[in-house]
Length: 248
Length: 279
Ligand SMILES: Nc1ncnc2c1ncn2[C@@H]1O[C@H](COP(=O)(O)OP(=O)(O)OP(=O)(O)O)[C@@H](O)[C@H]1O
Ligand SMILES: [Mg+2]
Image (cartoon, rainbow over all chains, first blue to last red):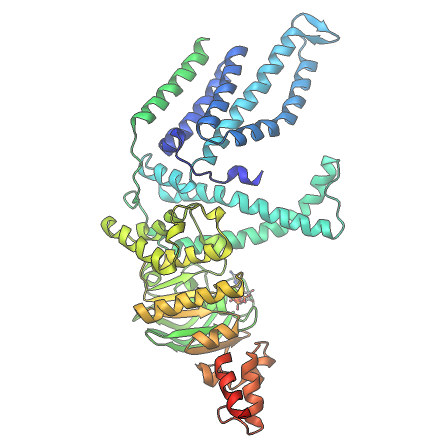
């Protein structure tokens, strides 16, 4: 789970795209998934997700994301087929429309979750921030806030794992099957985590300030983020995806 | 270069000052070590030297700190930080980027270094720290020692007059620790950068530093040339600063009247002295 947020270096087509285009691509896939009402098109979109993973050289990550989503998908699927009453009965209380609807819901969930995670995995957070500031004219302060939050996620998870390990060593059984009980045991640990986190975030802010955080502006960036023909291509793909969703 | 006049600082919301009545002078081109037990106020003093106290961490500030003839309270923090580059105790939270090159770029970009000068400065920093081969690596793939070097490189790329390091070897093995100090020595001798380093390993300090300050409970316990400070080995042990074994050995020999100087600062000196005694 932790390495999900870690940057994977490479020089694939996706790596060459402008960071903003990558995010646009992810958003377009999500949008298409929610607009489309065609089962086959949705299956196609899911394949497109996987294709993105393949193109970006993080297919393994895409697969593990899919596997991670499987549990909640099955749960959602069962819930849907039990509650949808419309359509012809297939067997017991399950209807054909229920099955189709359930499949759509599950597919949408998968399609929407995967691309953003994939794109973040192949995008350096600092590149994203720089591009937001340079190209999209977002004030640096806001860009920094967002990117810092993302940057700290793996660190928090590491710290949480450390704390839990320490507690397990003292005999707390975190490996219980009961989810509610597990959450109950984890909650008290959030307080020390929060305290150390606040101090660390403050230290990080101080360190950034020492290196001229406040002086940074739109023209500071050394690397430029121009748009290339492949960005144009990607934008066309985005448009086609959404158009396809509306038409089909 | 840096002069501190009766500095007292109390963090907002705490009940006791973190540093009390500190007066200290740090010479241009010096190699200055600061040592003291946990909670002695070393980090707070370091923060005051580069203006982070009181500009970022607010609180009651008495006395004055002058850096390169700028009063830290009246000057902008960014102006002070350009003169005094600080490497923080917690390297993890200092590193902003996910790739080494970007980490070096960050400060250079912010301080508006002309873009045609940036490449040269990055080369300089990477070369002096000896991490040219790491330039395009991700931070996540580096060891603790390598991250420490990246943090140092990202600060010296800004060409500060003073390099301030807060426990740079805290998480390093003895070999890497020596390497870091060797690097500091080079920067000090070759480029005349003033080094101020907070360090728990007294052996390293007594070997590399020229002057030493000992802090305890927020106050300055004593300061001066390394040899002068090490003469007080007994008192240092009492406040929780372990002295090098060669220092205790020297003191004992001196007391027995076998040795003229009361201080030996490294194993080579001790060996020579003992050889002379035996023969
Ligand atoms: N951000 C802060 N807010 C409030 N109090 C603080 C803060 N940082 C440090 N202190 C307090 O100031 C005192 C001195 O801490 P400081 O970090 O300067 O000590 P130190 O000598 O660096 O210790 P260590 O060896 O553990 O790094 C401590 O009592 C500490 O709790
Ligand atoms: Mg400290």
